[in-house]
Image 1 (cartoon, rainbow, N blue to C red):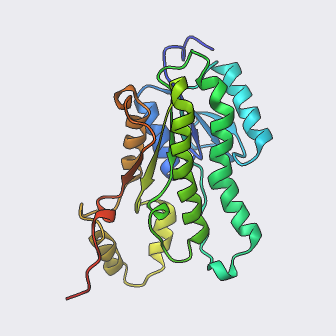
Image 2: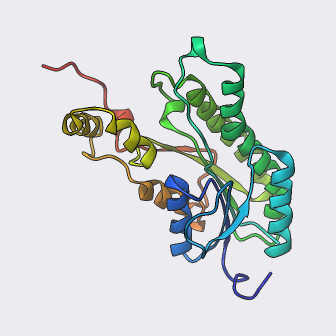
Length: 253
């Protein structure tokens, strides 16, 4: 481990090359951490340490952890962010589609959590913590997102178990459940509607806070949950959704 990083926290972010993952990586970087991004494609910012990883494949994650051990010798924060979503009715969904989403969204969290354990429990880590990115769709449903919602519910449940089993080793584990976050993926979804201004207004009205979420809203929460300031918080799913889940729907009057 080089002198340039030995006094910094070492943070690993899966799916960190774009969208919410990139915002999280930037948030930890701004906080002074040494950030490693594990993804299939590198981020545009070459300042990040990037390791090409298929997070749903055991051999690939093993290779990543060997690199982390050789390069840094420890892991202080693991952010399980990688995830995909498909929009398919349950009655039309193939087994292959179900398995693919579950592999990327759930198996990856299991593999990363299991194989990162030696690097987080070797006595060298600085207040080690795991933050999993779940979703409000694990708490409620959107149409056509049956497998995505199921996968995110699984992530939340796995978070609780990880907190229980890893707690005796000094490792905390929490989840963040984002609401509607303004990412390129959601931008594509909204762009298909002809009256975009009306759609934007309706989406905003779902949120008592009066705006859509930003990737930085999730990043700020992740940095806090992984920090020593959150040292007495574990086994929780923190909803970051602008109050959307607190608002009961009303008919147009």
